[in-house]
Length: 490
Image (cartoon, rainbow, N blue to C red; front, top):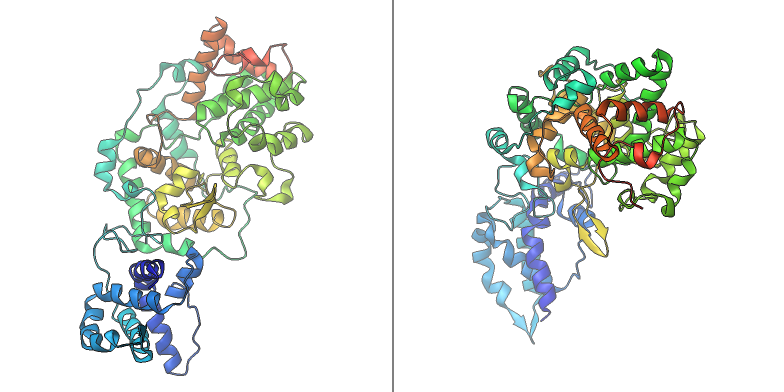
């Protein structure tokens, strides 16, 4: 007998067969009544096997093993007991035709009498989560914890006085600005709805998961621990600061350029590294040296992370070609791959005040709403792993609509105000390695302090050097004037 076939059959009984059974029996019932039925109905066992890449041999050992393993369901055990004699009948060491027929019949019965047992071997895990675990495990199980527990575990960093010293605002004031300024009608102008949403999207936009995510955000909104999160994207004070140095017209240009150079640098890194890389690229551009960004011999080691240079190349070339106006190819490209990732335009437009509707669906957001539990797996170095990447091209708009219209219904929040609250509440679960509480401007202020320490200047002088240098109005060394504390060693 083939041991691998037996093991594969047992696994199928407790995974695809267990979850897909109800759909299969309904589909068979439709066919029995003369109504249209599908060979592989959506969420049926065969459909799940195709989506998960399950390869079956079709051997009798595999079929019978799947059957016997399915006896874990009460309904399957009841009828199975009466058919055991047929299953044990063999001829010449092979399974009899009657036994194989009985096995297939009992398999269908078990699926129709489907119940979900508790235990880790079940796809629909007994953890009370409102999102199915299609792959038989949770990508990040802690995201489904009670909001009270999430708040208890939240690690909040104290507010830096530099936020007020450089930008004249506090965390609370930024939150108040966000709640006052938010406008649901203001959307990322590059967003394009796909022709059809991926099938797995419907698995997370169900009413129970909608209620769960809303509850997490509502708890965060009502807690002082999340102060600084609602106003995370509010950066008007940066433009106000630039106006004092450049005047209104140039300040607007600087403001857009800063975010255009920094936003695509968010790939595979923290916000402090994003600001350091973005301000360095912006300064190189302003000093007429943008081409040096692609020259490893001239760039500092801290810049040359996993994403350098390929992760930034398209965005940087688009910025150079557009005169610093955009990191995407053109307005017609929508959420094209040359925009770094579908989440990046939302990120950029949220910081410039041109998107309030859509959430910035980074990898932390994706994990928080449960997407990795239902997405198709991806291959990394020959291994099949759960996909915990940031939002995909065809996922962004339907999930963004669900988040803005259903999750946030009744909260009074827009997508890019609710999302950072969710980020803060789930940070301890989704892989955020730092404390929470500091909005974008506070992180920029901290980076500016790093420059001041490296160069021996005041934080005010360091920030003004960056503003003037990036616009080509003052000669500076980009390797020294960028905002960050990483040093300039090559």
